[in-house]
Length: 270
Image 1 (spheres, rainbow, N blue to C red):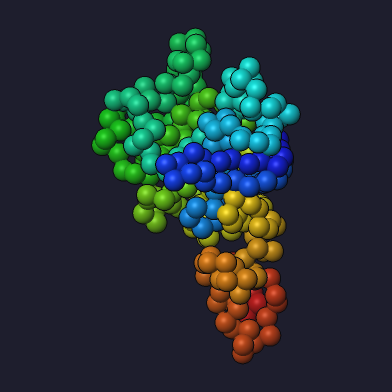
Image 2: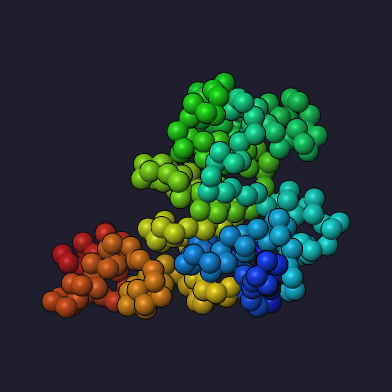
């Protein structure tokens, strides 16, 4: 579980202090799949980096399984529990061969070589990249590189995986592949924290946090968040296509209030 209490983060800049997070509170339970959305500058990535202590609070607290991330002696345990995947896989890959890259974190943990081999093989299989284990990462597509980055986190056997806009640099096919993998990991019991600008991706989570100016503006299920089309548009967000189409069709047809998916829309129209 992750618990955030009155979290405040201030960046020091040449132009003075910049408040990125301002008294933020939230709880993410074990095994949840949550999405965090917000416009640029809302504080999403800053928040993500607090989950595994890449950043520490200016004030307030972040707890991972009741472990205070700001206590230096807890850093090792926090990062063993929380894995991070960022938007640009090229900035995460450190080795010249795929399987060496997946093994990198394990080697730093001092895992025995035979265990490293076992974990690397299992992780590459989990992301359907076994056939590419001897490839140079530079020969892979963006989606394949991102799967390798995720394999590295899987190999670390973290309970929680934080993905900070992992599909931002991918084409539609690459985005679909990563989302399929993320849902598979969640089904296996991982806690998933997914930050995205793509509302179709966010709508596949169990719960959504909407951020604005360093605060949680609202939270709820995808149906609760996205079927309030006018409010989301006012805040500057897109909504899933089916939800927006349903809103337009309500001008001519009597449709249920909470339509989010194409299947739900088709059933209502039928």
